[in-house]
Image (tube, rainbow, N blue to C red; front, side):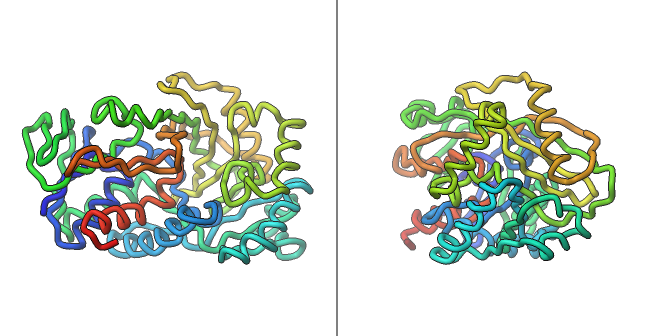
Length: 373
């Protein structure tokens, strides 16, 4: 059995791994010379703590183990010491406390709320100005710019996956695909083309009414030597991530944002910070939804994010690099598996958590294709 996969982002690679480890022949096609889409533009955060109970939490927990296996086999750095989500206000602290006392216990999230001396001891008191810190013990983080290429090399070297970079897939049909480098035959075609809804399967994808989310992101260098080893979030994320957003206490957090910082809500800004292996930090992000993402960044949006970053870290930072993140968004569900025709399917994410759940999605989808589940 031969699997033809369109797209070498995290979903494409996850499906390739799941198929190849079962002994199937796998070809992966990517239009650029190396992956350049959402899977390398992101924070590298594989969050379990933020996922809502149900299928997303299940996928994130299963993906955690797959990331561990990949890091060992492919040789990239994986931070497995969790994340810290800082409560800056009374409302945010109440929400995190309610999460720990209720949902976390009910659904098995491994998280603890640090207050007082425990919180003040973090990084020699660097974060003592916050009210509390939720330590998500199962959260992980990679440096995507290095992890994704390393995963490609591992799949090539150890599992025999054939990659066709700088190759545009022009058309897919049952049993074959047509590309800029020729025609390829296969038993199953899986389209994992991210936010490109026009090049392939445009008509069936249009029924999902997908949108594209554009993010403003930065790489910065802190002006003190933090030696940060954890991903960081703030209470702003509590109204963005499903683990918290539907709890009754989230209403007070949202009310505070709308009263004190309506511009953050307007631009979908909530702070994420990820350390790189080189002492720098990836910072963001904002959220702008449309059918076609604007190429123009707003400097004020960057300034708001930098202000939040410096307030959270308790130090000044220097901008090293700016870019746009982008991902497919706002489908009816967080993700879609679309059977377009016998032997032709599409896997799409409609949220920005592909790194968190993608590895287990690939495993689940390949198992289903082979009749294992």
